Length: 255
Image 1: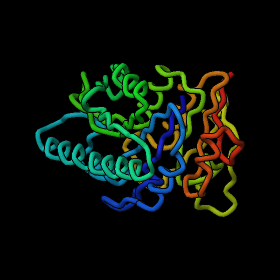
Image 2 (image 1 turned 180 degrees about the horizontal axis):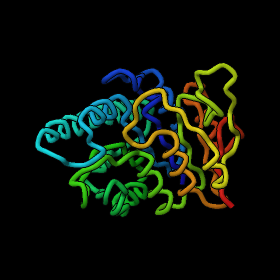
Image 3 (image 1 turned 180 degrees about the vertical axis):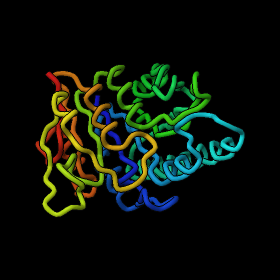
Image 4 (image 1 turned 60 degrees about the vertical axis):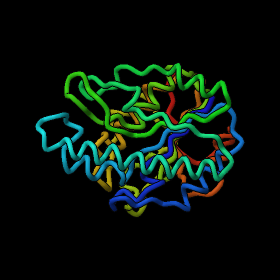
């Protein structure tokens, strides 16, 4: 079992509304072709974060003015999901979409209930389940954002994958803003490193940004699991990571 998270930062331009990087998306899907027992999660990128931030959807239901925005974000992330499905089918894969809003509930912004039985049934048939960042019901806030990283964290606990791969638009976690000259890759992160680290964000992210991603990775990893962030802009890197080869990136490790 392999989990792959296609980050919104690599398959879209998160600084522009509705901007998909179709060439990168298609290549990444081609690199996943042939992998057995794989589950794909993708971020919402510019199809979700921009409008969700403008209308403060991550903070829950405050008034009726947010409802049209909720509906629009729900529609937008499905548009991106359809593009991902199309690219996977073109690459020869057999994907099936499992929207979080139809099977996940949150409690105060934290994923609470997720029955993965349906997902496992599709895996057993040889299909590739595809989950994505979405808006979903929240038992405390009314609604909230269910990020792809939250889904990855729960799936790792339920499915016990041998490898979890996060595909980003940079080489991994850097020691400073990746745009700064001299920024260097941090090769490995352990729970003891988290409090001393500084995280940088180039665009608004309604799901907690890089720090929350690392926290999710630490929570989902177990001894013996390969958990890594790689650069999806480098051709062939995802294919090599799926195959278990040594690749450039940041590994998250727990004892």
